[in-house]
Image 1: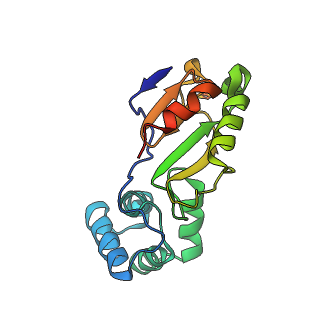
Image 2: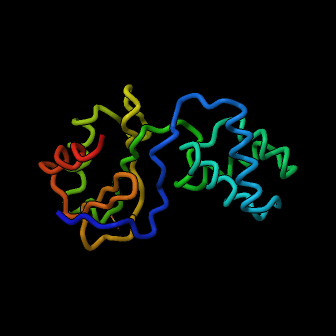
Length: 174
Ligand code: FES
């Protein structure tokens, strides 16, 4: 098994994730994001990234606030947020597991690893466990095809993994 530090992976934040975020907290986070990134439409993705980073996802109230600040329709903001994989419009678990489903990983045993992940977590792609610990999702190539099959857990990348190693990897996370 190869464990590498995150290179080019933008999934972060394991704290402050919660199914409910107060409106005042959302406002505070949006204001901080705008102060840091700017308040033009060109700043939209950095702003949304900051919010996602701070809250673990982008709640509806944040879309409303950003829409107001940038004078941009909420639907447009939502489209942008849905386009970028590193952004989430739904609350996530404390840990995000991403499984590479692209062909190079698939042909070296990815399917078996995916089955092991699903069997262990009892989750489908895009689902979050009832205890709020895990969110599981599939993704396209993570850029480290030479060590497939590949999964990431938060900022950690695991390559050359086998189905038998899945449990051991998951046990590393609280
Ligand atoms: S195909 Fe899986 S990391 Fe590239």
